[in-house]
Amino acid sequence: EAQHHYEETSRVAEPLWQAHPEYPEFGKKAAGAAHGWGQVQKDRSRLREAERAFHQAQALYEQVVARNPREVDANLGLARVLHSLGMLLKRTHRTEEAEAAYRRGLVITAALAEADPQWTAARDQQGMTLLNLGYLLPDLGRFDQAEQADRQTIAIFEDLRKGDLRTLSYAVSLGLEWDNLGKIGRASCRERV
Image (cartoon, rainbow, N blue to C red; front, top):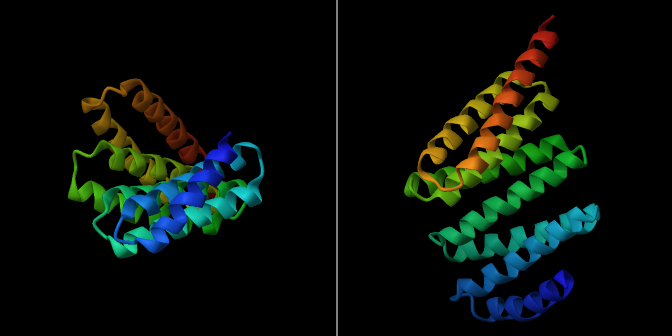
């Protein structure tokens, strides 16, 4: 069923987007379908297909953003795709590429959060991307940067936890980050000895 949804949405939305770029909704629909299809493929451990779908979604979101730079939903969609791509690249041991994807997504979410500090979706994505960057950086031997990413993640989730109904979700994320921060400290000490 997921494949059918992806194929139907792509079949309709992509040509409409190409024919009518003045309507970003078409591009966002096509990009969202490709991103969703990539998630399905990743969950099935079809990593090449997942990566292909993520790159397709990335390209579509980039087209929407290039034509409509103030389209915040497309910018957030692009940041989410970059996050998904970063997770997949980490899983396939392409850590430098994963870091680049995470950092590019962080530039986008930081701009969105700065433009509207009350938009929890942008801040949540910023926190999730920082969380995964914090897990990645020790693999590159960059413990200080990992600790910094974890502390930024904690600050974002602490702030979100205060004003959002998803308090349990943020509390779990905070617990994971405090745990990761402890692991980084221990690994950093071992690395220095």
